[in-house]
Image 1 (spheres, rainbow, N blue to C red):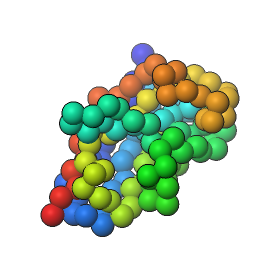
Image 2 (cartoon, rainbow, N blue to C red):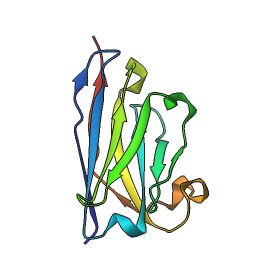
Image 3 (cartoon, rainbow, N blue to C red):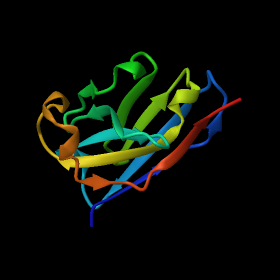
Image 4 (spheres, one colour):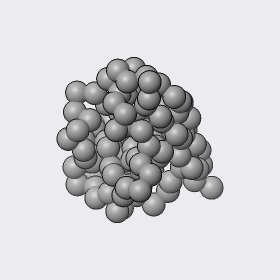
Length: 126
């Protein structure tokens, strides 16, 4: 059974940093692309970043440029989202999602992800 479990969400002050983890089980990251998404209260879900099976990354959301980075450790079957310079508007539930694909992330639409984690809450507030 394919499963994703996010962790690392927390309350952090503006300007702070967090690293979220997305642990995969039931499949190997060698054949899957993983995306990070978020959904704030009353807003639609938005895609943030993707990392492909080959390790290349792609940014879906311009506003995280220079602040958020995505990486993975295939040995641990885990994908990370490093978030720096956090702002109150980054407050949301953060999700990771997977799609079996050998394509580069730029070719993967957000709607194609078919396995989702339960989410982890990130709150940015003083």
